Amino acid sequence: MPKDFRATTLERAIGRQLAGWRDERELSLAEAGQRVGFSSAKLSMMENAVQPSASVDVMALGYVYKVPTPEWQAVVLRVQSAERARARSAGDDVVFDPAADFANLVSEATLLRSFTLDLIPTVLQLPGYTNAVLQLEDPVRTARLAMVREVWLSRLNDKDPLMVQAVFPEAVLQSIVGGPRVMKAQLLHLMEVSEHLAVSVRLVPSSAGAYPAMGSPFTLLEFPHRQHNDVAYLETFLKAEYVEEPELTAQCAQRFASLQDAALGTGESLELIAEAVAY
Image (cartoon, rainbow, N blue to C red; front, side, top):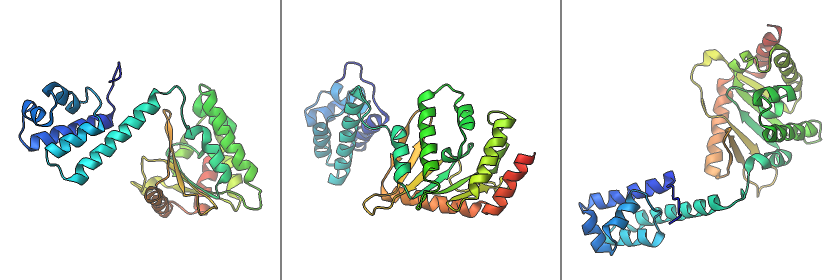
């Protein structure tokens, strides 16, 4: 066991599962430990996630408790996943950082669909807007966002430009990020790029009420090669991650289509942006 072990939520869920198996069979810790050959203290620590559970120990419990094979095998897979995650976190280097890699995917994509909650999408931001959002306190992230924006701008007039479809709430227009001058410049830029055939900007009106994906921003990227699956990109101020499972990215695509259905058309959206500029 690691010297300063701290159970992850996955390991705690595994412990609850083991305790659930024992409770279903109405066995005390002592009775269960005796059957499987563990001390009651070890079994208690496994159930309470005071120590990590080993795959072989979970297999032994599944056998002794007569748990259906698919059920205990699923828990073993969770244990192995927890072991891999712990091994990664113990390393000094991050194996792969999606936030650092995102600009590369933008350079390779053919379609970028972005749904944001309270900001203009990254690729459509001006530097002053981005700096105001980050308040100049995160130079690394500022540089990464600048790279994403520059990659997109460099492709805007290509023979095969990156198609950008952006959807965000009307309320984004009323948030004066960086002050009136910065925000006005940002909205004028938004109107300018919206005239490009490769760019679609649509607003979800405030009158729409609840709408699909509310509270869950995401970016979905599509690529030209059949061997390259769609990738969803999710980011918070703490971390970024890619979601690549086809069934999950398909859900993102479906959700984005529903967002477009809830949004105003591009013409009506541009009228709202123009009104915000003139305000």
